[in-house]
Length: 131
Image 1 (cartoon, rainbow, N blue to C red):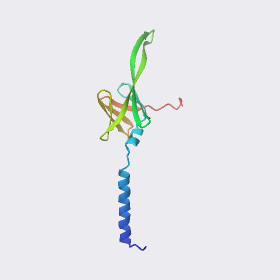
Image 2 (cartoon, rainbow, N blue to C red):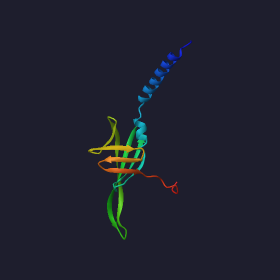
Image 3 (tube, one colour):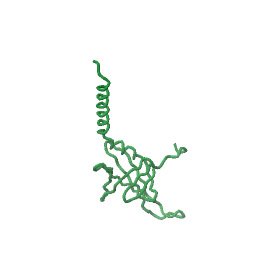
Image 4 (cartoon, rainbow, N blue to C red):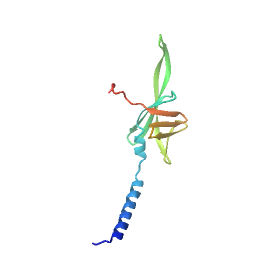
């Protein structure tokens, strides 16, 4: 088969266009949620959260602290009361339903997670001495 240079360029354009269409049709929502997995700490003193994948579902566990019995010299003893919610995607937006809607957004460049209306969270990195 002998193709002219012009026809070869046209075939190349078609193949590149097809490749671009195939890449755009890939589902990247799971990959985006994979980036969120880990331990997160509020910059405003709100409860810490853990995001993880369980089967096909992504879950958010919020670690609420509740005051317990008074302890001598050290104030109050704290007990963690974790609550877990499903991290859902609706129309390309991430959210949690805790009885009311909490929108979740992630800035990959700064590695900051934002819960609306609960504020910004930064990833907790393990200390090298703890590993």
